[in-house]
Amino acid sequence: MGAASGSATERKGSCLCGAVRFTARGALRGIIYCHCTQCRRQTGHFVAATASADRDLEVEGAENVTWFAASADAKRGFCRICGSVLFWKPDGAARTSIMAGAFETPSGLEGQMHIFVGDKGDYYEIDDGLPQFAAGS
Image (cartoon, rainbow, N blue to C red; front, side):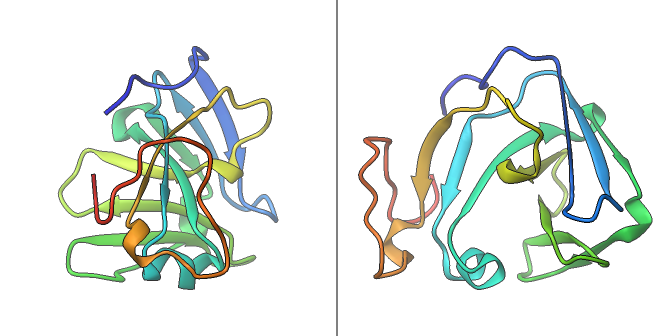
């Protein structure tokens, strides 16, 4: 994997309605674009997400986050009020993926790779030059 993206030590973001707000402190992973069927069905397109160590992530309004176990290995967090997709968390991991579009701009985030491109939608091409993996990285 590439180096953490951006140099900011604190980034803020929220859901569409503002009921869930978060602050990520410290280094964040570069953006991974996931083209798997689950991500596409949940969002209507592919997912762009970074990741933060849980110790560096503060969530206000956590009571408004609904967690859905889409698989036996991970869960997806979204705002129960407006439906904004916010988080993806592997079971037992000490990190949480955060949807890149939920951050305030400028975020300083940069793309790192595409995963599950073997499952991508047939209505778009990936032509940004980033590494591509048929399944996970």
